Image (cartoon, rainbow, N blue to C red):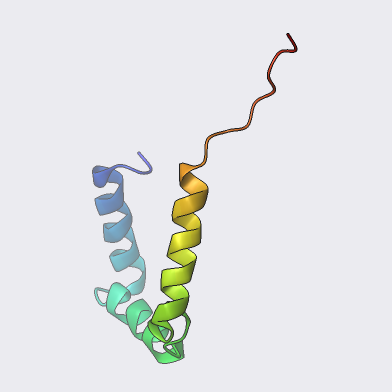
Amino acid sequence: MAGTPMGGRKAAATNKQRYGMNFYEQIGRRGGKISRGGGFAKNPELARVAGAKGGRASRRTKVTEQAAA
């Protein structure tokens, strides 16, 4: 049942049983401690440029060979 809501609930229950009821609180705390606030959070202009590039790339049509006439 991987990837379903019911499977997610089962996995969460298993994690809490194995590692304690505050399992998700602990892993969230670990991530927050090592975070340095970099990336797009630090440079909104970079995010804008990257988003524009991605938008242009996703709108391009696939180049196909045309039959010789």
